[in-house]
Figure 1: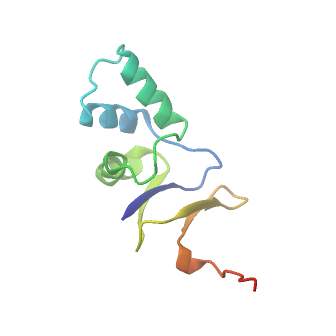
Figure 2 (figure 1 turned 60 degrees about the vertical axis):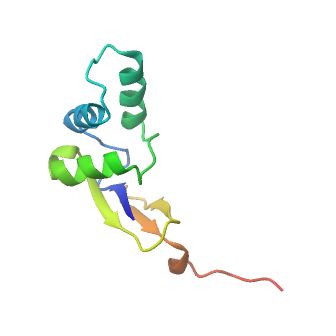
Length: 103
């Protein structure tokens, strides 16, 4: 599965071009349409799932023009995104975590 992460910025940084392309890909071409506005706002505030296939496709297609976003491949379907103190995000999967088991 593919997941989109942000890098080098403590905030989610998606470009206007990426928002526009995402909306076009899901059939929202009228910027004054309320649904277009809601989707655009969700994209700008990181409320779209990071594994959303359209988001992944937009970031892969636009590359650096998508903003400070990258696509990462993960092995399974479960993940968590962590952010370090410099704003770099990274993906953790269950096999990356040293679980403590209580008996």
